[in-house]
Amino acid sequence: MNQLDQIDKNKLPKHLAVIMDGNGRWAKQKGFFRTVGHEKGANAVKELVEGCGELGIPYVTLYAFSTENWNRPKLEVKTLMNLLVSSLKKEIKTLHDNHIRLNAIGNITALPKKAFAELHEVMEKTKGYDKMVLTLALSYGSREEITNAIKDICHKVKNNIISIKNIDETVINEHLYTQNLPEVDLLIRTSGEQRISNFLLWQIAYAELYFTPVLWPDFNKDNLFEAILNYQHRERRFGKTSEQLN
Ligand code: FPP
Image (tube, rainbow, N blue to C red; front, side):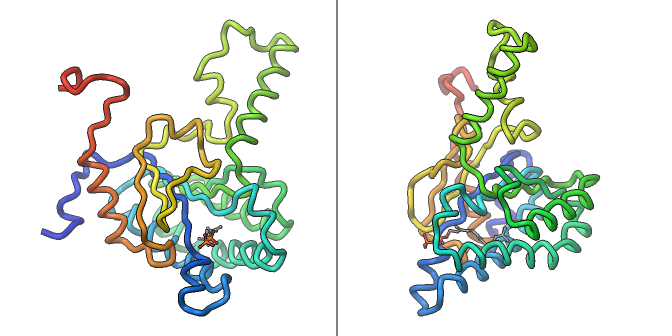
């Protein structure tokens, strides 16, 4: 039986998040510029989205560009932004054909005008779709997101819109970029690094973490299916005992 057949379609993660790491190392190993690694990384994004579509995973969130990534060499930042624009232009048909809604989290107003405009256009054109919500984290930092949420809530308290006694987890959720997304069930990070790197810190509270040595440009559907199978063999207890679950 192949890996796809072994996957239980009733036990899929509802929300898969991915830290796509290792583009630079992939390129270096092959003697290419880092930018080639990012281009190959964009192909891997397509393969991942196709794989998630085949399985029927309804929410997929990708760490495409962090707030810290602005500190990379100017040329690399420019390449990543151009790649975003060209990938959006190229893949809009795939989004239409598969009824995928594009979403973005992060300080997207910090993106170059062209990238912001393209992103906005594709989000508008796909906003009616409901088979999958594909979220790109762009200029995203979890601490910044939480800081902004705290500021918003404080502002509302000051203006008597919310009272302190009513601040709970739901209220906090509603002030995050991810307000319309469910909690993350599975977080995959490629390239052998075992860090979270300021990604969805609040949202991964009960997520299963899966680290693989595969570099992002090499990550294919088989690697995805392997991660899903691994996830399905774990017992998610959410603080309870095994006996309580049974
Ligand atoms: C990490 O590899 C990857 C990134 C910082 C960017 C992710 C971008 C893509 C996968 C391509 C384009 C994506 C979209 C959505 C069009 P790294 O450069 O940190 O690799 P390294 O750790 O080996 O140097």
